Length: 445
Figure (cartoon, rainbow, N blue to C red):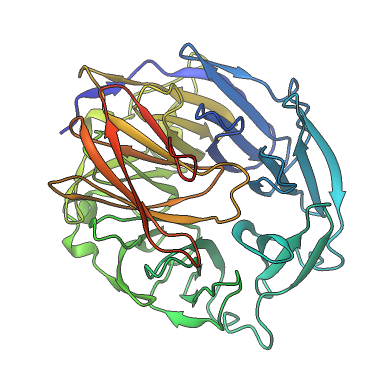
């Protein structure tokens, strides 16, 4: 059931070049999400105020032109910074006291001579902040010290076991087996590798996993779609879509045939996908975007059975310029940009136009809780589970840059549980009200 609709589409501007990602980032650490778009023609940064967006790229002096990025507090000053790969090398854009960014090259030696397909935040080591650099020859561990010195080395020694698995797709760092230590999952066209995490921020030698991304261009996302406290994986590719149920212990089972309307209404060939909760019922749904048709949103009825959300169809939506959403997208982002407890959607269309679709709800008293980590948290990502007296709302992967959004069907007490490496499980009862609530792990609020 949905109780709202998309508002009129808003043109936010245009992004030059090839766009690699769009994401909601809590740049200011105050719970007010900004939109960051990575593009090799010049990154863009937008803030939202009073329901309107503003391009603050120039005002914040952000000059990156990114193919791959990761946000984290690299110098441990309590502010998020940007690490960018532009196709040639790395640059670190550190956030200053006034919110502007200062750029400097980051020398990683010849580690990136073969290029980079993705940057992923990983648990700290004793030497500093760790980022996984995904390359065709295998992942690298990049350690950045507090004084911005970088050292890169292979994540594992010896021959890379993924060389026969086809094209590399998404790489995730998250606690996938529920032992409070972040693992790594690297997905390829023809298979995947599961790297079990160690308490010191390092990873064990990987073992092959059951997940495959599929043929051609593909997209992958994580979510706890059955609410059992373990993160599942959804893949969309040119040869079809698949739902990979997390069985624990780094093992997964394909289960799309038990996923309701997602099984037969979703289309192959998705180019971006993300977990979402468009109806604020505490069950994690799925957004899929395409390069030749309108996006699709599926809400979760429970137990990983999905319904197609016809209310949020975008078949006839176009911008004032005449550009149609159905002509295809480069990427998308779904998040609560207005801070009102409802998830809006931003689409980057094929011509670079940025289309903002605000969520308009017919329901009064929207209930939602955002769960965040402070920017200088030494432990990220963190697996967080949420429940109330009646049921579980599942697990969420939380980083300092990207908090978890938990929509709830009604106000009342929820229990948030997390475990930091080397510590006992911690729980906090949070009172969800009919206005959005923000809970920051480690700050008790």
